[in-house]
Amino acid sequence: MELDLVEISPKADPPVCKIIDYNKFLYQQKKKQKEIKAKTQKVVVKEIRFGPNTDEHDFQFKLNHAKKFLQDGCKLKAFVFFKGRTILFKEKGEILLLRFAQELEEYGKVEQMPKLEGKRMIMFLSPKTQKKQ
Image (cartoon, rainbow, N blue to C red; front, side, top):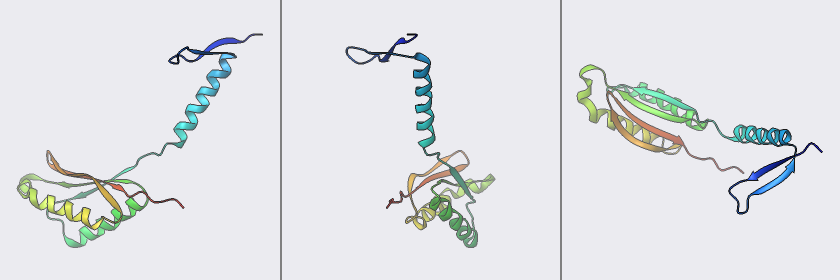
């Protein structure tokens, strides 16, 4: 009959086997994997860069972009880049990022609090899940 004995679930007790066409079985498995891959959501990370002495207008401008990114469902990586001697103003950078997070409270939640890594202070924000009706 040109059929094969295929082990379906080897971890079951006793192992489950079926008599089917092996090529057809492989094809169906690939198809299932493709469907699963298509259903997964791809995470997009957008970056917003500040300096420790960012002006109010620039802050508001970047805040509007961040709101748009979070509403689109993207994750946000906000960071303050310290150049040269500006590393002395670490607390200024942290205050800036915390204020940024506070302004975006209704659009997203803080995933990681501001953390200094080398010359950058990084904070991650993720969008609030929208209820589907």
